[in-house]
Amino acid sequence: MTTPDMNRVADEREISDVVIRYTWALDHRRFDDLADVFCEDATADYGRLGVFKGPAAIGQAAAGSLRRFDRTQHIVSNHQITFDGDGDGGGARGRCYFQAQHVWVDASGAHNYTVAGSYLDRYRRTAAGWRIAERVLRVTWTDGHPPPAPPAREAQEGTSPEATAFVIAGWIDVNPDERAELLDAAVVMMSETAKEAGNLEYNFAADPADPARVRIFERWRSDADLRGHFDAPHMAVFAKALSKAGVHGRHLSRFHVSSVGPVFEVRT
Image 1 (cartoon, rainbow, N blue to C red):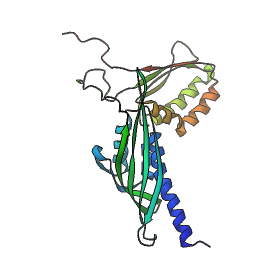
Image 2 (tube, rainbow, N blue to C red; image 1 turned 135 degrees about the horizontal axis):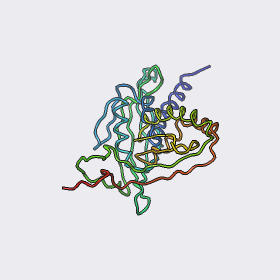
Image 3 (cartoon, one colour; image 1 turned 30 degrees about the horizontal axis):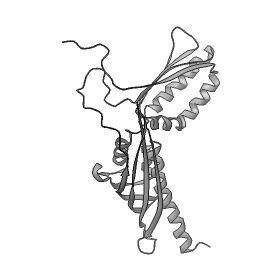
Image 4 (cartoon, rainbow, N blue to C red; image 1 turned 90 degrees about the vertical axis):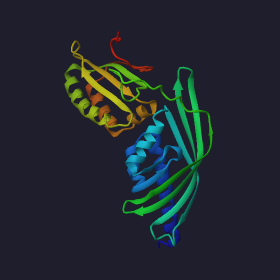
């Protein structure tokens, strides 16, 4: 027999899970997953970053803040949840501590910027389950420093509107008879990858001089975005296509980008 206390425990676990899903969405750059975390009319007060309404706007704000870093890890603890009325009215409030590690890398090595504080939340029971209706972030302390802001530059030919952290380029060799089928699978892979946060360019192309070779070119905004790419469902599908194609050679390299400009120097 289900008792009110059992229902209360189940609700508390579901609310805590929503709070944890938020951290996974941020650290794996799956900002679209925030639609399963926030109510459609939710608000998020991110302090000096501003107040944002709706999962899409909240996701864009989080992406804009986190894309400067190569890796992040958000940890939440000390959850306290109280229910409005007797717990059956569809509302609750909660608070928890968070500590977020932000790692960024430059020519001198890896750096860590830590932010710690509290999430003050209001939750609502929806047809899809408990969701965050309001989140207020309060920072208690920080340690280290974030990466410096990129210098302002005049728009010029060949300059990407979004900063490229690194390029991956190279080739793979497959069985020539299987290359066409692999490239068909690559078309789907390219389309899905283009939707991912942090991907700026993703291309597979047949080498016209070698019937076995496939050329690869990618541009990414951060290492964390690339790691999220390898967790994507379409990556698993494409891995099967690669296996069927019989990869028997590969050479891929990562090239870190410090600046971007036109192909030819502009002379006046």
